[in-house]
Length: 408
Image 1 (cartoon, rainbow, N blue to C red):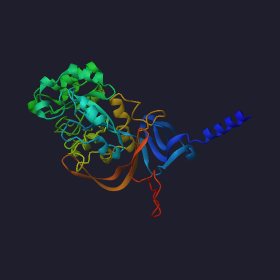
Image 2: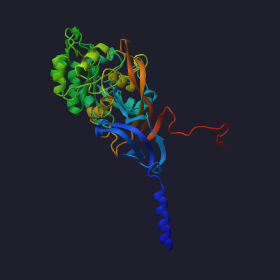
Image 3: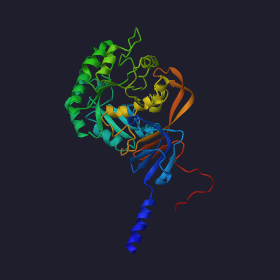
Image 4: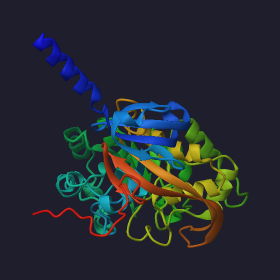
């Protein structure tokens, strides 16, 4: 009889324990991967998304956060940022988490010679998930002296470093090659073939380079490869300069599977190019920031601002979130691990206000455009932990003076 009572008591205690750690209540969930665009609750257990449903009881969670009036999305994925090597690099936790960005892909800062240093100095210490597109240049992105050195573009060694660090390296980057011809792209693609990863391309198309957008997209890049800085007009000629129409080779490249990435940066987003391209239905496949010290302030290239600029040009919020979550996750072959709010996946979650008013946005030439909507990050959950809370929604208000616990 005593055993039965004890068993009943233990069962009752177990039943009374909260099932979830954090519960987000009444937020407007946008999860394009699962076709959700509605009011839902999200429950987190340890570091996983445990349940997404209507009206999960607050009693089932240790901490309930009222998300009324907020949009709740998967943590944003920035496919092109700079956190290592490049002299304008920014430490990811200082910029990403307060922008609802839980995953950053460093675009070419490290090469096969320097990736191990990036792993120790940036990837391991960061709360932000940091992945890498490793540079085809062994020394990485540290200036023209190295980035123009074709002797340091080693396909075999680059592929070998990827094989050694599959958990962290998701592709290859070729950038800033100032020489003539196709050596940088050819060797990057060769390494991509060996390692079975995509290549992100960022190179000039000036007359003296011997390279053209058409050849690059149709003859050199493979399905799944990514061209960043798509609205730049120096790295890629999206529009015919005489007619203003999207070039036929752009449409053909997309048809054959080449991906186009925003890559805003400090010099790579121009209103005239972007506006005409989007008006003709040629939007970026993925939205990214090219965030660095020269793009974070006046150009305002963080993820919420990039999304807001796309909305200013006619993109819907749902579409922009898709291009900032599930689309980049698929591009780097990390779906469904990333980019979704699927039950059982890691709890990387972002919460936003969508403000209405008059807002000023700038392009890389610092030309201003006014718009009526602004996406503003207010909370970020990374790996199940609350890491950013702009409005203090997760914490009780202080109401009376002197109510501090004295810790001996």
